[in-house]
Length: 257
Image (cartoon, rainbow, N blue to C red; front, side, top):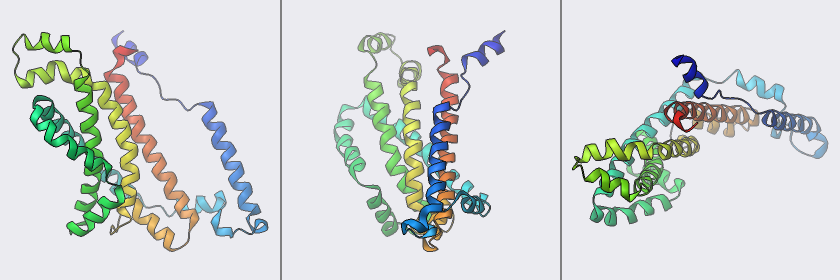
């Protein structure tokens, strides 16, 4: 049956036993240290027990999670569209590539902290600042990965396609896009992890909502339990987004199985 074949072709996401063991060992060591902290000369708040961390989870506000998630998804979509469009233009124009490529490399060399400072000095709106930082960091990754993938398409295939005198749109839609889909998914996985880290730092500066802002509040209150709880939320968001991309990749590229 077609539906049964589709279900079989898409792998089910599993949680490896080794991962569970590693997490269990970490939890035991952390809980033990939390009880031994006073005897080791460590302040009790520095290594909170999981009971205190569980209490911190009860104070987590869903609106902040939703705001951070929306910022990440919106910025990644904008970065992908801009990166793909520029990659197509640079692939078709050698002169454009020669002028833009050094600038793209320069953008990628600038530290995230510098971009955040630039955004604070240049733009008045908090949302635009965060979006700008995310796009300027993630966009070049999409661009370079996509451009390299296009150049990796075999020359024979390109010449064969050009012999049919396709339009620019047909050339990219019929040949380039199917060829670079695996690289696009890989680039999305890399940028999701990057965006989660960047948005947290960006929200620390000036934002009044989001997980980064809540981490800043927890730092001001010296609440390691709150920092731990919000960090686990960030990790969970990262795993969720990566799982969604992996699921889509498995469906689109099921012919590779």
